[in-house]
Image 1 (tube, rainbow, N blue to C red):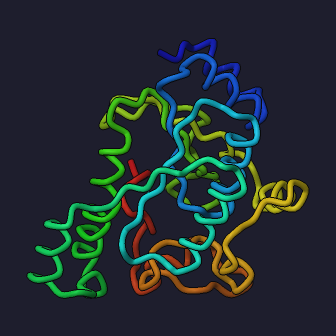
Image 2 (spheres, rainbow, N blue to C red):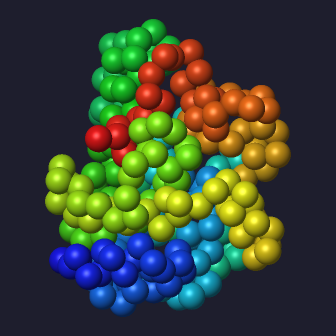
Length: 230
């Protein structure tokens, strides 16, 4: 368990210090889910560069950009550590596509959320099975839904703690870390794609737009897929 003292300490530590503390207290129960975005590349670099005992995994929804696979391969080569990959259940995808259509997520928010549930949430829950601490790359300025998220919180649905080491980082902080540490990133970021999800559900944004505006751009919603919404 994370005590109040531990939680208070984590609020004062840098991301690297916090990850070291968490992994030392729970050497077999800490996992990190990476979407291969810029924030997640920061955390991946900290974990692998320091040899921390944290399982790193990613979700392959079956609808990702080619650039995701390219970066995943580069990460595995650079750090000499394999990132685990979780896939959706084939039967779930087949049922959804055959009953509703290959791109049914464009037709309603309900369809889109069901697709996210099948391709993201269910595989995530499998990946988190048995974990005590789930590390994320969330930042408070990414969306309204994330503005008040704390550094560490209890996820009642999944019965584990969620640690958000970059929650108070600015986007410039992220860019500075990537540059200073020569961390590779998705080539899409230089083409206006900031928050990147599945290929058919992501567009580039223009200057001044919220980073999440490019996600499910046809919707008027909170721009969440169900992984981190409350």
